[in-house]
Length: 132
Image (tube, rainbow, N blue to C red; front, top):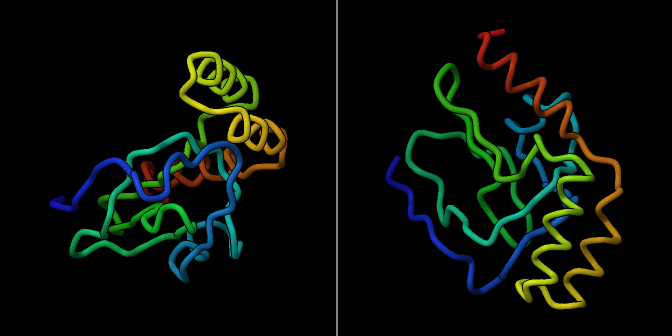
């Protein structure tokens, strides 16, 4: 789609359950919510929206949290497919390997059990794919 993608060296990792501030389009797609709580696990980001897409949301660490083109494209930066167990495993392994320091690990673990919207996001993706 032509948008620049790379490591977010300025802001670093975005991990665990994170609140995404939704745009008007994001609110429309995700049941009128103002924010979407979703599991995150990334340091790579899309730096700017490509031409022709509708932004879905942003966080302070990652401005491009999702994009939408009706009938063609729907993306989110987070991981609606993750469960608490999956994320705990990733966090523990990355902490043991030294990818995450103690402070980041402890902050992420404190948020890992927080309520999230993964199932609702997954449902919305299925509806998008079925053109509903």
